[in-house]
Amino acid sequence: MNSTERPRILIVDDEEDICQILKSYLEVEGFQTVLANNAKQALELTSKKNPDLLIIDVVLPDMDGYALARELRDNEKTFLTPVIMMSARKKDYKDKLSGFLSGACDYLTKPFKKEELLASVTKVLSV
Image: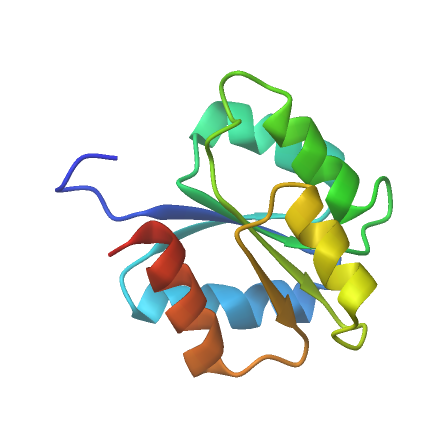
């Protein structure tokens, strides 16, 4: 990302309403967003759109978010792309640890607050 480009964030969640909420929160702050509703689509979009950050739901229809994050870490083109995991599960130690072990930089619990999301994104992207 060069200094004139707005950071591009790929949102991966099979719940359309969550995607739209995230999109609206992020775009009003100047971020570009791309939406995917499953892991396969996320992998395709990652190679085409080269996002600066991925926000990945843990529960996806075709592969869990942890596996998707690990697959991104195993790819030489995406292994440095930061990931924020999110889940509607209670913030329990094992879920959070699984997120970090799969390569996530942060872990958000749904329902999240707009300020929490923006603080996490800003921290991870250092913008």
